[in-house]
Length: 333
Image: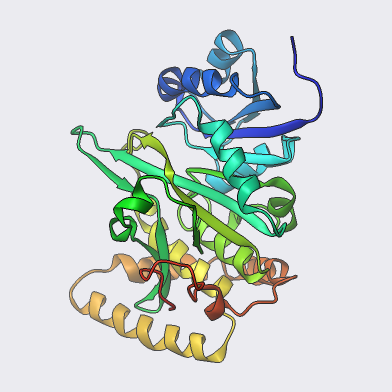
């Protein structure tokens, strides 16, 4: 019997030529969702796949809503389509290479509601047990934001958690939410304009939106006691050289989009120029090419920077200051 009431949870799974991964991991997601006593929906955004993803889903998973686009664009564009098409109070973004425990949807909703006493919670992310192609496994998912060589980036600090925190203590305040497996309040995602499509096809989009949320005074939590298995890199293949430029290009673009004070701009210019000169002198030209690649997007960046700054009231530097109850690994930039 269908559950009554509004849809509470919308699961959005982006997929590009991910039929094999969906065959492996999606049944477990559906089984977990069916244990909820609240209404849910599952959307797979087929981002221009050529492997029959949409046909497979239509035939084998009629309970899944397929949002299809003919041309592949990337993560931000795909999840934004899913968010726009969703109707739930909460949006759960989930990579298609995740194995999840059957009770995870219920516990994610509980963690969000328990942590949202003030009504300003943006997102809750979980511990990811990464599984490499060789079968080796390591925990990750909790990161702090750094300004390194003049560019914003994240560094994983999961290893700094205490055993009590790792074993399921209270969720910890963070300033970065990994979008691979995280639950968001949908209205806040929409208020920010979704993920920045300037950063397609991938990388730094969750860094940028996390800091934009913090600049509005919204909180984010990391629930170390909730765990998923992430088969890291299982969807990666050979990529053209320009794709290998994207991570550095997007770090540059995200930095330009977020810096908001003369002090930070001067630090960026000084440290990045020094790093770029050093890399180039050592024959590493990829960062220089990534800079040129970023400069080509300046017109779009100016428009997006102005749009995404609306409503921001907290200086960027303050968003990366640790709260009183944060672990000592979370330090200011």
